[in-house]
Length: 164
Image (cartoon, rainbow, N blue to C red; front, side):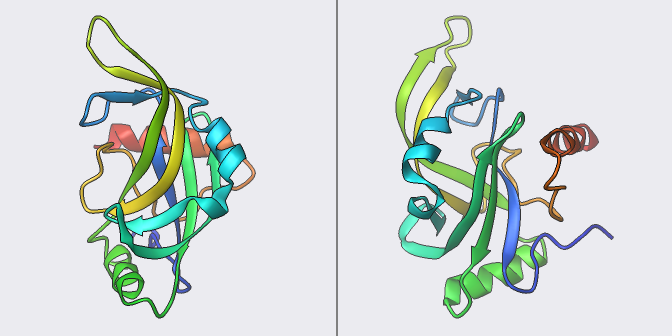
């Protein structure tokens, strides 16, 4: 059986966004799109919400970083918050596993052939745990990737795409 996607203290991790893939709204996030926002805001000013609802903060982000595959996020649900406690149980049982970004577009172009919007700079406000992510690959991962190798993490996530 695969590793449980959340630990007993409410810590979980996964890709909040994946580079170079078209999401359900026709957007494509480009590598480096989060760089300025992460540097300016830091993880402490990016909220962890449920379903993008500003009235539903459920935890804190402990680490946010771009790698070659996308925006990697490591968060922790706050114990004692009823929604966070329920989410921990739902994630543990794999009933909810989506992640989704809330942002303002700073810089984008339109791909003439497809009409897709290419997002080259994003002002990231929040990342939510969601039932249905706009980017299908934006999911809470079962188990924590090796902290010493972004390449290993990117390859493991890419290989997971081929399993489905």
